Length: 224
Image 1 (cartoon, helix red, strand yellow):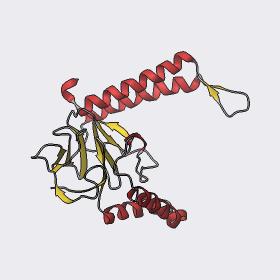
Image 2 (cartoon, helix red, strand yellow):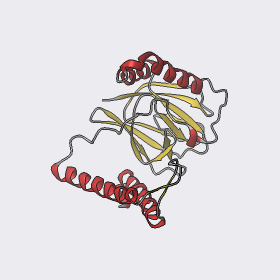
Image 3 (cartoon, rainbow, N blue to C red):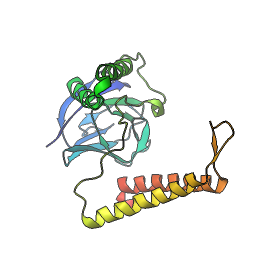
């Protein structure tokens, strides 16, 4: 059984701490949720957090106004210490201070020549977010965790051979579209800007739309 700690940074319930709740955890406006928030923009049953393969997975429960993690709209997402969950007008921080300190140390350890300065920079950003005087964040699109990884997330584990093949096929398709687009790039005079053929630009936009659709299908398999 996994445990998760959440602290409400902004919103009507600002200051509340939900410490080491046993998963699964549901968040919503109705009684019966593990966490009931006083926010009219939150759905009755808005999202669920559950443990799988030693990770905490957040799933949006087809809420009306959606869920954001670090400012991005999501359907399903692995959340880590220091991540920011935006629901309605409320903002929640994942992890206790010690949990976040542990992740900061792990990130800093990967930068041996910048440990002290990098760690302090992250701590300062968290303190600034935590010390914001506003009870409401009007635009959660601009709220991002200072602990965002600087590298791609790891590949999914425990995939069957067919799942691994399908995942590879998907990545191959994305790589092929981006490769074709970048091959048509033309360097502008001065070397500070590049130009992309309009047809290729449309192809990139179409790829973005397809990825968004795939992400939604992953979060809501019934729609596929």
